Length: 569
DNA sequence: GCCGTTTTCGGCCCGACTGTTTTCAGTCG
Image 1 (cartoon, rainbow, N blue to C red):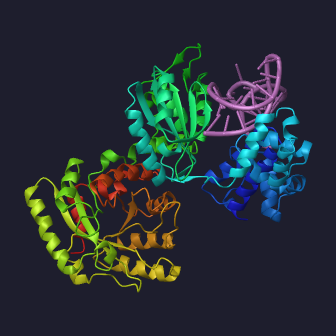
Image 2 (cartoon, rainbow, N blue to C red):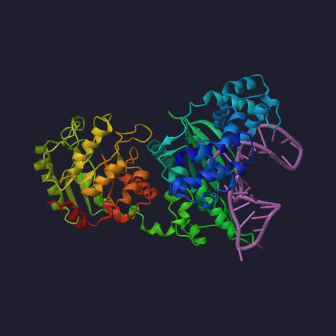
């Protein structure tokens, strides 16, 4: 029995129980059991006594055992028989949860989108206890938009909106501190909405200014401390603002950064010490409320090291505290190994890019323009590559404290060959190989192309190994575990491309690469100076895979990097 | 449904907002 199926079944049971208006603690017990299985590294057959796992008891264990033995679950079957499938999509309607849906089903026979619409139109819904005219209108309105509003938004889309909102909030004089929070701050690839936490002494004025300056389609909620709006952009994007006093700012930021599971774990921990965490502070056993100047101080209050926002996910991070000091952070980064200039499709010259790297405090970097095959990007021929190197030498002569290396981002061609001969490659300091064409080839062909690159002694790194664009395209579907094995065998670097469009390799693959001790380079792939800032995103994203700094090539000192570069020469 | 060197029963994270009430339930994050 596949573990994934078991997890899905437990989650389905929770969903159906919710639809029946069951006790929410019972519902969450099934969800917790599913999460406990997912969080356990072992496969089902490797677990001897599953009730030993915290969160799995008699009831959920019975479901799991039945699934393993018969492939089916009587509990789920009975639930499915008693509950119409058509109710499931209705749970997505804002304002409708299990209890209300159960009532609609039991009292009015609502079992689908259509029957709910009819019941509203016939004004039957408003007659139910707990419902009213407004609720009925709201359901009708939401039914129109069901499925239309995209559920989650990719990080690159949100990044642009966050920058605009940050600019707006910076311009409001009455705001003392502010920050984006939520899953965006935790660097999730996709987020449902954006959260901002703001501290101010004049909530009403700040609220007024925010509402005036944003392009708003709809104000969803407007309370004392919370404003929730839908922005009027191509995609409807939900943004929540929380307004609190300066003393409350840190605990509010922590609360709305989440994740929910992380908060639950923290609150349980607090409770064991007779304390109570809320967004307004930590209530002490004597009833006084303590607030904090920084999140570091907040965690220190519970004798914990600072837990990076990117790590605050399942709650299990609280069991890996000793690993946190070894994780890569932006401060550890001394180089960027993948960027473009005006020689191919970049916006800035070698001189400008080099100076920008020095400004960031780096000790070295590599210029890696596209190769000749990529004509749309003005890829370099071997002759132009030679001339470009002269310019790099000039830059190095003028900036002796810094070192710019000559490299290339060479295409792996559709027929499996490489865009430059070894004679050209051996003259370069750093060679990146990557795929930009014929994404739809079979996995066999894609892997042959990658294999050629990995086996070439002059290639140092494979860039954006899967070619995915978050939320847009899957990429060319390579067998990543195989690629990781090859990288380990031939001593190659794999890239974590830090562009918000890519974040490639993804967290799951980075974890695999780490098991094989494959060195990872976090690179911005910058096509302009402004994009060098993606390094922060890249290092934050790497933390989500618990990537250790010693495996990250950009943290290596220049002489260690050179040892790696010239080992085959 | 799960859990427990203070508990085998009575909790289960905590609070805001809304719409429905006239003090609160449901939903949400």
